[in-house]
Image (cartoon, rainbow, N blue to C red; front, side, top):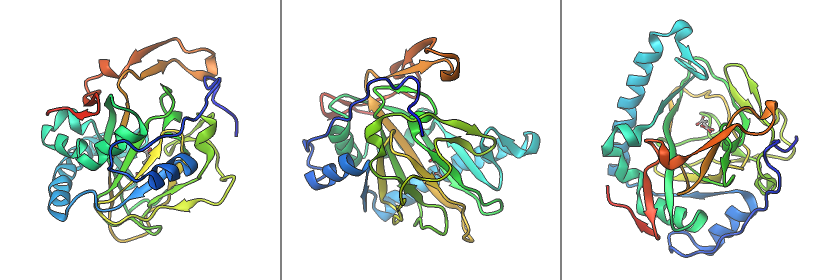
Length: 276
Ligand SMILES: O=C(O)CCC(=O)C(=O)O
């Protein structure tokens, strides 16, 4: 387990409650362990509405994948794990969920007063080809500065160890971004065998686990009889940048702001939720 070559002098900053959406105990847990589970973010009616949107997006993604060689693109594969990305910028009806008051409070507390969405995707773990999604930090995919941003992993149905809920290694987020390598068809990995016992994040539908982009996590194979459904939204400081290039080749070759991407919509300005 090594540091990412672009992670030079990372120092974790602790957070203070300001929004009232989370308690200081929850924030302290996030700072100490790199994650916190928050239940009942969405009512059952809201959840139904949200799942209707993600189901449509997943059906579109599946139709597209079905036309590809081996029914897959990169790590998205029919029957295994399917990704439907960029929903907030293509399906305006999902934006009210992206700007949910509790989630925005968590963003205020765990990122700051000025926040943009960085990425969003519905991730469905299918049952025909059960497989792990490897141990990784979200900042191990594209290297964002500041390195800490916030992932809100929303359970759209009850998620358990059996159907592939997230598992987390607490505490490692404080070291910043780790080096990752690509495991073909599965994704980027920072280690195959975790250095400590994972925490299993089983979550009821409508709740979420918030974790840092620096928190190593995995999801296990879906060994149940039903699709496991998640909607994952990532939020970053409004002026965050994505470093470009390949770390194996040396220094980054450039950067662009998340604000320059169509998905980089502003969600919080001076601590206030932005209008749709
Ligand atoms: O939802 C999953 O099964 C894995 C998704 C994940 O960890 C990610 O997109 O970073």
